[in-house]
Amino acid sequence: LESRCSIVQEYRIRAKGGEEKWVSDHKTAISAEGGRVNYVDGIAYDITDHKKKVRQLEIFHKAAVGRELKMKELEEEIERLRARAGGKNGV
Image 1 (cartoon, one colour):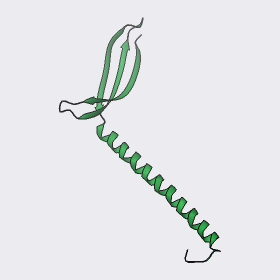
Image 2 (cartoon, helix red, strand yellow; image 1 turned 135 degrees about the vertical axis):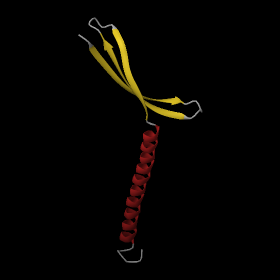
Image 3 (spheres, helix red, strand yellow; image 1 turned 45 degrees about the vertical axis):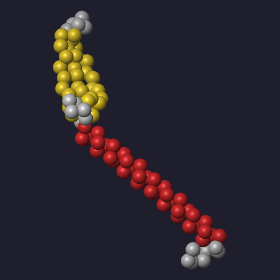
């Protein structure tokens, strides 16, 4: 009986031109009965664009959450100022 052991890894590499690339590496070791590995089958995908887009979304999300928190702080400050001014308009 054959047995299979699979692993997926993501890592960075340096391309020939010196640029950094991200790779998703999928490997499966095919073993014979007794555990000896007969061969390893696998494929690697360039996921550099995906990683860049994920990073851009993280930056956007952090900025959006930061703005939302700042707006909440400003709304609370406006309410405090209104309360201090006796609820008068124009504050």
